[in-house]
Length: 389
Image 1 (cartoon, rainbow, N blue to C red):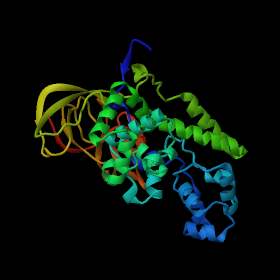
Image 2 (tube, rainbow, N blue to C red; image 1 turned 120 degrees about the horizontal axis):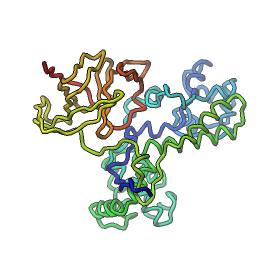
Image 3 (cartoon, helix red, strand yellow; image 1 turned 180 degrees about the vertical axis):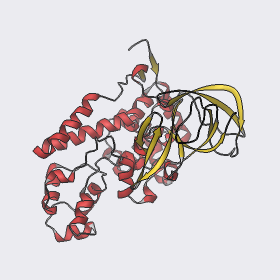
Image 4 (cartoon, rainbow, N blue to C red; image 1 turned 45 degrees about the vertical axis):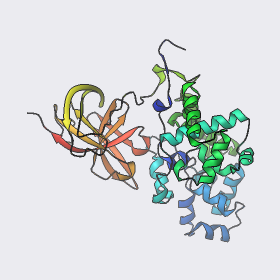
C-alpha cells in the first residue's frame, strides 16, 4: 500500500443510488423487436411462438433484470426470426444511457426504488454476517428468512423500514441480536474494522457494478460464439482491461486511484450557509470553503451556494456571480434546467436537454456532454443567481 493510502469508510464509498439502475443488468432490444413483429404484449409472444423460455423468466430478461443463458438467447432469436446479434445493445457506447433505458422498460413508479445509504450499510453488514456464518441465502430459512427476501435485503432493493416486522425479526435473529439497536451496533462494529466499506464497495460502487456486468456480458458473448457479436465482445474485453475498479484491502485504498467521493458535505441546509469559492479548470470546479455566508430562500431543503470564477457560456452566468442551487431528485429533472453535478468537492454546471425518454447534459465551455445515467454523486438545480458588478 502506498504512502498515499487512506482509510475508506462506508460514507466515502461512491455508490449507485438509483436502485433500478443497479438492477438493470442486461439492457436489450427484445421488447422493440417483439413489437416490430406485431406482438403488443409479451404474453401474446409466448402464446403464439414455440419459445422455450417461460413467461416469468422472459419478462425479467426483457426488463434487463437478469442475464439470460446462451440457450435462452438462441430460443428468443429463433422465436423472433432475427439473428442473435439483434437482441444485444452496445452498452459500452459512451452515449448509452442505462437510466433512460430502465425508465422506458420499467413502470415509472418503480424507477427509483432502492434503499438509501443507511439501508445499503445494513445490506452490506447482512452479507458479511451471512458469510461469517458460512450460509447461503437458502440456508437462512433456519432463521425464518426466505432466500428471495434475504437477497433483496442484501441488495437494498427497498428501504428496510418498509419490510414487515416478521422480516425485521428474522434479520435480528441472523445477527444474534436481541433488538434492532443491537443490529445497528453490529453494523457499526463492521464499520470500525473496515469490513463494511469493503462490502459496500463490492455491492454498490459504480466500478464494481460495472465490472460485474461486464464479466457477465462477456461470459454470455463468449458462450454464444457469434461472429456478428465479435466487435461487441472486443469492446467489453477492453472495458474490463481498462480496470476502472479499485483494489480494496482491509478498508484501505490508494488515493491516486480513488474517484471523487464525498470528502466534504457541500450540500447544507439552513437559513444561512457557507459560500463555496469555485476554482475552475477544464469545466470542473473545485470547491473551497470561505467565511462568506449567504441567505437561502428554502431553508428546509439541502442547498449549495457557489461564487463562480469564470463565465459559463450559454447560461448567462458571469464571473463573480453567486449561484444558488437546491438538491434535486433525478426523477424531477426537467428540460431547460441548469444543474450542478456534485461529486464530493467537485462540481460541473450543465444544462439539461430532453432527449428521447431521458436527458442529455451539456456544458458549452469547455464542451462536454453526458447523461444522467453517467452521473455519480448528487444533483442540484439552480434557483437563483446574484450578479456582482
